Image 1 (spheres, rainbow, N blue to C red):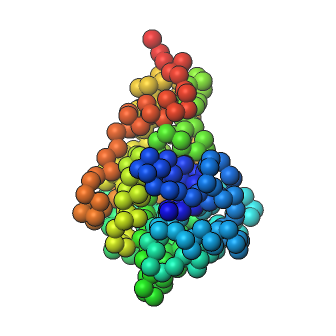
Image 2: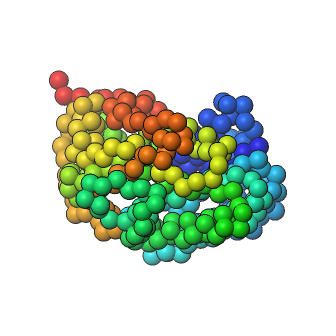
Length: 296
């Protein structure tokens, strides 16, 4: 049995489906309760008898639950990040036997600011900037402490994950929805900012495989940095040009993210290749967005 926390989330839903298609028994844990059969509706930052029982009986655990949102400025965001990222991870690790493989989702944000085009490698010094990145750094420290005590823990650092099922507040999902309805695309900051966009389907494949491999720390990125302008152009190629509004850039975000994929290629045996046009087509189909704004 594989336990997936955050099973109602963007990556979690697809991982659960992938694992079940591969004939695994999967138990999802999520406070939202949208994952279908064999799901525990629970807040893993709080002690829960059923959650502890599931984790204690698991053959592997993939811990994806957490508080997303680098840009969140709500008054209680600091508390929620600590509770949902740090405390929740500590609860999962405490309830799972040391011999059981646990794959924990950190974030590429732990690398910090721009590295002048140099890829971020797993052995690099971490320089987290902002509350979200710092909370993920603490999560990694908890995982490292468990590994030092003999625990089987893998840390993954996903880069900018895109694809079918993406949250509606994420940039690509917002732009596609806007373009499909004929509204302008709103971009935060410069179109020259660059991201390592990574297909969620490749990420899911990697996560499933990592439950069977030796513990490690691993980037989950495509290894190619592309500008926001390139992403905008790919959206326009499908939906047409509906206009563009550039607003002031929020703080706490790097100019560029780029994964060093040397280790991931060696460990996984495949590349997390990402075709932006293919991702947009799949995401549009999943969201039932028709290219109604196409320009003749």
